[in-house]
Image 1 (cartoon, rainbow, N blue to C red):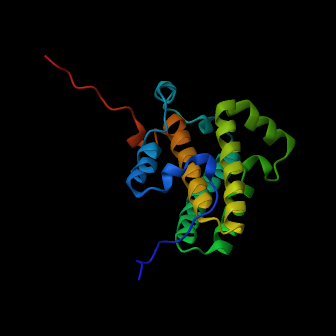
Image 2 (cartoon, rainbow, N blue to C red):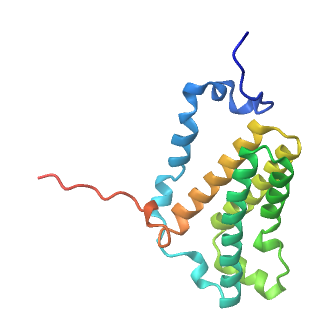
Image 3 (spheres, rainbow, N blue to C red):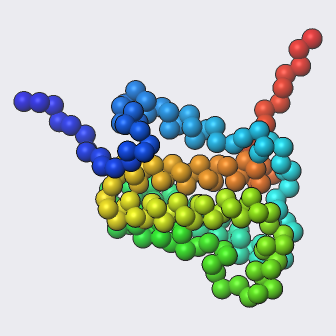
Length: 180
């Protein structure tokens, strides 16, 4: 009798068939550690959110906490093939987009005035990826769902490395050793 095979995965042809091979599984881990660019190192360590009003800053912090909780819940749901929870949570992540919340015109203007466009673009992409994850979960496509979990995490890493090194000092560039 043939040995039991693992779960079968569908989709994600664009990502490459080589990712299905166990010997290449390390690639996702390596890629997730290498998502910040030299440009990210040049960014100021100060958060652009420090310029927001107290009310908007509190809303932003609450959104980040909800995203963290939602991402953790989604990882667990995908790992357990709990597609209903994965889809629901991914849609909650998508819907938490601060620019889609009920903000008055003055608050919207403040967001666009204070937050730099690259920051806003990262946020928009994060929520678009959450929608793609929800679609993959609805289709019970484990491989595609895992890919979008990776992409969500990549978005968090990229944004934090560029804009939140003051909160996450592990993203600070390594200090160079002096050689004499």
